Length: 223
Image 1 (cartoon, rainbow, N blue to C red):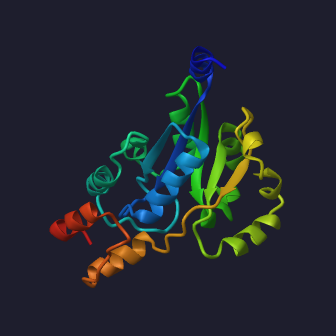
Image 2 (cartoon, rainbow, N blue to C red):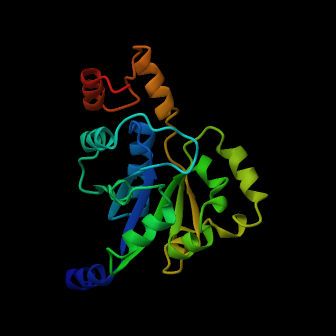
Image 3 (cartoon, one colour):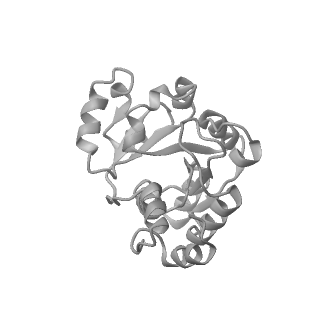
């Protein structure tokens, strides 16, 4: 195949756009490292990191929207990552279906991929308009939890999710939506709650967040 033919194929190929939502309170290596691995493994062109405005759960967000976005700017400075504040700008409770449909309108020739953690997969079919979500994108699951085997067993019992699981990456990336792929990523055993608690007790968070963010948090005393 000539260089010209390769360029022509690339020009007509659909872009692969990831969507990763969360409180990011604060953003940490458990968010960024697995996502970067997924970008590389699945050749995603961009990932929209979408900070939640008001979560659907009882989880309370501590940092302000401005502070969370500032922290994301410190950690997400590569060309693949887009800090997307559309849920904050939209206001109200953040529902992923609204975000996916909104991002879909921004791309005329792209396949969309929702990025989630293995712990979220277990009950994702209970999300608002899940049937519509699965018709609008495919889902890539980061198996970052040490409990991933147990979660997979539970998924196998879920009559709605189990048929959607794809084990063939080529088939998963075909044009049709409605597929879920479990991607093995680095296990970063931390959470935003743990980091906030450590900072509150003046304990070290080295190795859990970027050094630049650690320095910023030390100065601004958000938690």
